[in-house]
Amino acid sequence: MTSLAIIGAGAGLGAAVARKFGAEGYSVGLISRNQGRVDALADSLAKDGVSARGFAADVRDPASVAHALEQVTETLGPIEVLQYSPLPQKDFMRPVLETTPADMVGPVEFSIYGPIAAVHQVLPGMRFLGENKGTILFVNGGSAVKPGRAVTGTSIAFAGQAAYAQLLNEQLAEEGIQVSQLIIGGAITADDPDKSPEALAQHLWDLHTKRDRFRIQVSED
Image (tube, rainbow, N blue to C red; front, side, top):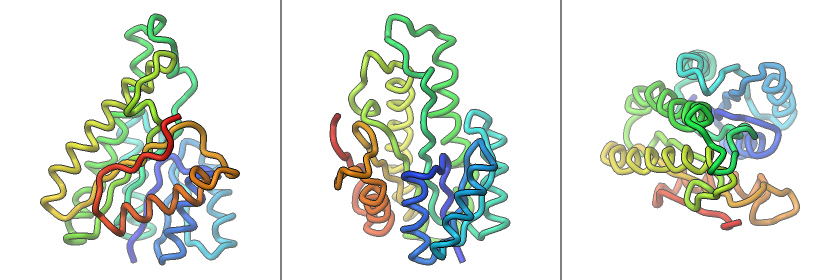
């Protein structure tokens, strides 16, 4: 049995993705900073028949990320799909003229160091699974492709993450490992048929199974 690891798992998109992949037979590793929250989410998912476990990690600490993913593999099986989708902190979003070098440390750790650590941890296992199995999914806000001067930290760091994802896509395609990005403009909204957690989870499932594109963008807001 293989697993899906969601870094930044929460009750919205993370839960919807866990239900979608869980219904298809995947075990799900839920990773966030708060162990209690992911444990509660795992209990909730179990009621829907999803095999899930919670693991604590701080994405700004590469060793913490690697350890959590190692635990997912040991507990739930080889990681076939990695989703990197933690929610940025509000203090990353400062106006451009107010953003200092110190203000960029957190966004870079969060959006660049974290995913690089995650990819290095899961890649050997994905290679072992063979061609056309492993998938790495990045989820970003609209500032990843259209920077906003009021959200400087995420605009710069998300752009760096997008570049890293695209480079991975080009390189790992040769090995049959899919790397894709879902861009979500504006807020995820249950009442919006295009941006509900369930609709976005379907996009992520399609990116994994169809393996025919790098990026899907939902709304430019």
